[in-house]
Structures are given as C-alpha cells and as structure tokens.
Length: 486
Image 1 (spheres, rainbow, N blue to C red):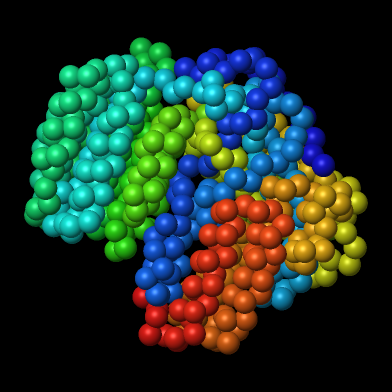
Image 2 (image 1 turned 90 degrees about the vertical axis):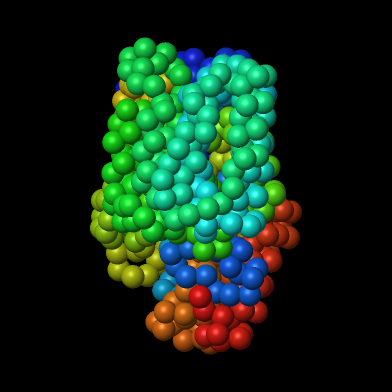
C-alpha cells in the first residue's frame, strides 16, 4: 500500500505536445535515463562467454521490463507510486525488504505525441565501425529518418579522425528526408576515432534559441562503438562536454554498437541531464528504438530527481537498484538526472536490511518514506513530495510459486526476480575476477534460474522467458570455467 502527500501542488500540464485527454490514463510509463538495456551483456552470453561487471548495470536491466505499480488515479504529468516485497538474496545473507519507487502519468499512448525537434546526428565512421556495425548504423538512421516530419530539423555529422558536416540543419519535409536518406547511404567506414571532434561539431549544429525555444526539443544522437583513440579519450572529457550542453537544455542519446562497445564511456555520457543510452546489436533493437520508442526517448518529463530514503522501522538502506546509493545508513539519498516518458513503467529499487541482522517479524505498517524533489521538464517548476510506502504482507503475490518473494504488487514482484538476475550476472563476473568460487557462482545461478522460471510460469511474461534463457546460457558458459571469461 502507498500514499503520497503533495508538499507543493501544481496545475495540470500541457506536457510538450502531448494531446492526451484530460482523464485518467496510465498507458504511458516513466523510466529513468542512463542505460536502457543490458544488450551488450546479453550478446556476450549468447556468444558463449561470461560478461564482466562493466558491461551491464542494474538500471539497464530494470529498464528492459515493464514494472507497473497500482496506485490512485493520476491526473498529473508525474505521480510517484511505491510498493514493497520481502526477498531472499542469493548469497544467503538473510531476508530483506525490497521497496520499489515508480511513477504513473495521466497521458496515454494513443494520445501521446512528441514536440518538434532540433536533432544533430553524430555518426562514427572510423575503421572500428567496419562491417556489421556501419551497416546497422545506416539501417538505424534510415528508420529514424522515416520518423521525422516537417516540424523537425536535422543535421548529419560524420567523424573518424576528423569531423565534417554531411548535411547542414535541414527541415525534414519530403525533400529534406530524401536528402538525409541520400547522405546516410554515403556513410562508409575509414580512419581513426575522434569522438570529441564529432560530438563537438554536432553540438555546434544545434541553434541557441535560449528562452525562445517554446517547447522545442533539442538533442544530439551519437552513434558509436565508444572506442576513441584520437583527441580526447578519457571518460571525464566527454562527460563534461555533455554536461555543458545539457545545461543549455540539449539532450544526448548514445547509441552503442558492437560487442567491443566501450560501455563505461557510453553509460557515463548518458547519465547527464537529458541523457540516455541504448545498445543496437540486432535489427530488432533498431526497430524498437527508432520505430516504437522514438517519440518517448526524446521527451523528458522531469529533471534532477532527488530522493531521500527514510526507513521508518528498524531497517536501514543496504543497496540501491537503478540509481546510485552512496552508503548504507538510516537515511540516504539517490538521484537520477532525467526521467523520460516510456512505453514501459520503470522503477528504482531499494533493499532495506534489518538493523540487528535478522528480520524477525515482517513490518505491518509503513516501512519507508521517499522524500522527492524534481524539476518539471515542461515549465521548470520544482516539485517536492513525500511518498509513504507500507508493506501489506504480500497477499497478492504470496510465495507459493516464487519462494523468494512475498510482494504487494506485480511490479515489485517482477523487480524481485530481476534482483536475482542481476545477482546471478554478478556471480559470473565475480568468478571471472577471482573473488568467488565457481561452485558457489554456479549454485547462485541455479537458484536464480529456478526462481525466474517460476516467475515466468506465474506471469506468462515474455520478458521473463528471455531472462530464463539468459540464465540458462550463463550457467552453461560457467561450466566451461575461466576460459569463458572475457
């Protein structure tokens, strides 16, 4: 059960160019920015190897799933929601409380429409992009071009060891789209990789409209395998470049390509204000991102989400999932630079541990308060709210099938299973790093697989069938020992 108390009330918004009816609608979800998938780790596992910890994040895994939370009817752009569950971590440290923070919105998918867009495309055409990567990039760009219309303007920048404008900022009417398609066909791999030059030139294509933007979205999309070897090569340099332009309300979407993707760089750049990151490894990834999801990934709903976590029983914060938590303590904070509209309902998770080490009795009242503040993307108004989350005992999702979780809501039940998936991936990485015995890692993977199979059987959710396949293949790879460690 959850309740929220508005500390600052704000009017209904005409969010961007959304044209949803003013009634209750829950079809449009809200997800955090940053990494939106663990596509690289999945491909590594499918190729027969064990992914390193740098190739996946909890927020990327969570963002791949729809984790809806039941709540009161939402009549605003953003409505905080929460739910709780008990979980049994794979490492045997004892029962924990998992609390999910999610958001509802009043907009529905049928009525949702993004606003006009100034878009600069920075495309890596260096030698490391040769073959399937440059082909996938062209396919993605062609799909993207077909999503644009006369309300949008687009510039195309290609870079290897130097950068050049292939298409100046052009209105995407029929003639403009034809010109863009032609320039996309001309993209060929060559030379070294100077991401700094390409990104800087792309940012320079976006006009500085200042207060005259009137809801116009401005964004750079970077297509790269994130392996710079000329110019700036340090993560900090690119993050600072992205941050400077984020302060000018120019968002950044990083599209990563290839199994040798520099994930650390791509993820760090996407975590700035207005940023997100997707992995493009298969035709299905391209179709999903640029056909089904394009309007959402370029439409932020809120910036600078700050959450103070206040457990109200004999619990303390142990781990954050989907957002960083600085330390284990009674009251801690985490933050997310951007929340985007989405086809799916995202979520941030917190594991709470008992102060005395043993959860002797389940809480029967409120377990945590989330004190939130965020800036509305539509008008810059800062909103403050308190969300109170209680645990009702898991009557809706008792542990008859999925023995590790007793959850109050389907969304947090799903998140509990994703905690197991993430921990199983972590067991594989720890084995490869030499910090976990292979037998222990195998046992954790087996327990995670059993739980996810049970969750899949109960939910009939295709996404959990995918997780079952991932864990099964990961266990098989581990059985071959250290030779499968990347």
